[in-house]
Length: 463
Image (tube, rainbow, N blue to C red):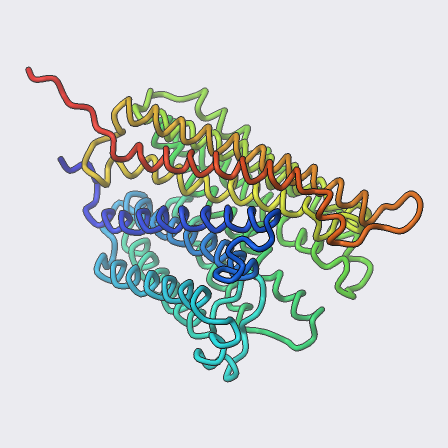
């Protein structure tokens, strides 16, 4: 049974499957790190903490990129009303990207990082050693080649087909993603200057162009599951991405507070960062408004739940928890504390992990030839996965927030006497770290439930 409107949409399937495999890996390494917080020598001789952290964060970025690419290959042909320009190129790039990703992660795990730098000729163009951008220079070049081929494929598809707001916003976000990644190749020796441009990749991805990708995917899914007029959804999309870019680009300033930058960045960063929750709040209103105005009852209830959950959790994680510590006079005390980790976990899950799982939830039944939706039993299991992961992430965030508040109080706000040292403070936070680890195990169970749902089928009664 073929349920795809365009045959070339099928190239999205391997991207989605590989993204989920990497997601499982990311969570496993997160659990290893979480245990190392409280049992310091756990796997210390095999997977040191710094390696586990590097693998955890790199897997996050790579699986999200696979998810975004799969989403684009699925929705762009349907929006453009034409087959993908080159399905063969999409599959070749998949294998190139997958091989580069696997070899890089194996490199992190199997050889010391300095040795990895030597064998990948990092001295010829030094780019390694920075958080989130630890990839060897040759891997970075591979990512650029994959991105160029990917954008060429999508661009040619859109040029020969219908131009919709969703496709234009998606392409703008993806082009921005590729352009800002180029700052990963600039590695000045001055640490303040290095961090200044490092945020051009990290912040302008997650609080800039990635929001466009997220908005386009959410708009696409809402059109499909609600049947609301495209014109209505597109107007909302334009407003949200305008707000996201205006607040997000200048909001980068909240990372420049303590980098020897001019004092005006404390004002610019604080004011525009305070505006950053607005597009996420608009996204919540938009998603619920569209579902309430729906003209059809789509059989894929799970995808609708994911779409609504994405809007809410993105607002809480990126908006509310981001605002908690973004004003300069607050950030002075909270910078780099566990409050930052709390914001990072819920924001990445709410805004980006959930939007990828939304499009997978919607598209996978069609990609597997099942129809509009998985059977009712499968959807129930998938919704269990949704609630287990989402509630677990809320608790992970709350426990890290508690740890962060106590950390600031003990280490940075001593009422009398001397502040505790970093390690002495960490000992006091152990209960929060144990609770975070338990929540992480529940999150993994939710992810397993989500993935299990795709293997559940109901036997049809014989006529």
